[in-house]
Length: 82
Image: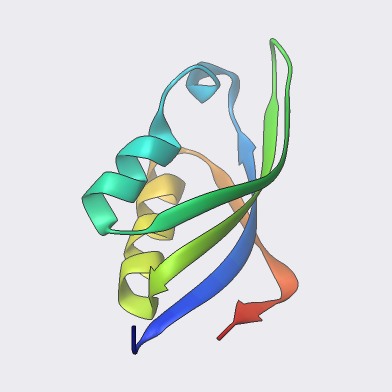
């Protein structure tokens, strides 16, 4: 489909969101397809390397929604795959 892109991001979850389905909710609300590339979760912290596929606008809205939830998001170098 035209206009779709992929972007890789590293997420760091605060303890209160570790057990919440925030990736699932973001995917549904913003029409973004997540692909978990790597994840590490403990009782106190969560980290995830995530590949997001969708339109640039949908990805940006989804990423902002995650940030607003309190998740730290870092763009991974060379992360845009067209």
